[in-house]
Figure 1: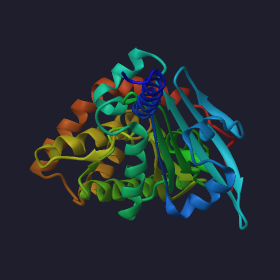
Figure 2: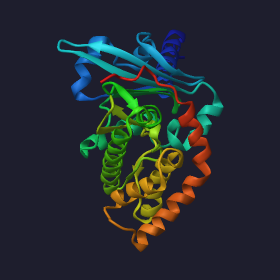
Figure 3: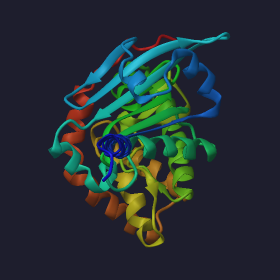
Figure 4: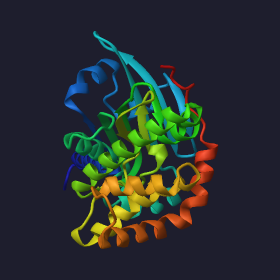
Length: 309
């Protein structure tokens, strides 16, 4: 007859083992930190999902039921660094199910996509904020909490505020010069991005940042929807990005100025047959979103007072 004590010991050990395995299956954490930022984040103790969520420094710029955008400033031995921390959490079954195939259970999470897209854009020589870190916490395979940390752009000014608030304050000659430079530089940036067969999918003015009022660089943000397009989707992918750019443009730019941007993007001096086909598709896709995007530009509020040069 087996000893009762021995049986009890085996049962207790088995239960502990099962409990540990269940905990591992229920909760799993994954954190990635860019090599150049590892030391600074370790000094701040921000190497786990929980540590990032317990951070209460800085300023909350946006907040919602399941999202938060926080601006923080950390100083190392040389200088101060501004970081933006995006947090996403999924407290309800409805929120988890809404992204079932988009990272909450299957596929790549929003924070990982944006981290990788920022790194991809920078590797191509295109301006984008430096990706610092991202982290995911999953429970039972479901995404429970996640975060993305990116480096701030010096004196950030979104393109919609530059067009709406800065351009009208310039003299006619200065405004014309700035519009020509904007047309040329933004067309060049967009063309270079599309040459890598990459579509942003959220290429609105608000997601393009300037540093101060300089048009030398465009910093692309909120790129979690971006992805390389398939060969068969070339024209439509290009058209989607161009349509989002053009959606509020008729209220701020003349038709000739918008056409000049399109020709600069295509690298042509006059419209070809293929140009006309693409332009028709752009206008078709832009039409239904124009009212909403105009409203967003009109209601946009600066995060901070405009930078004085």
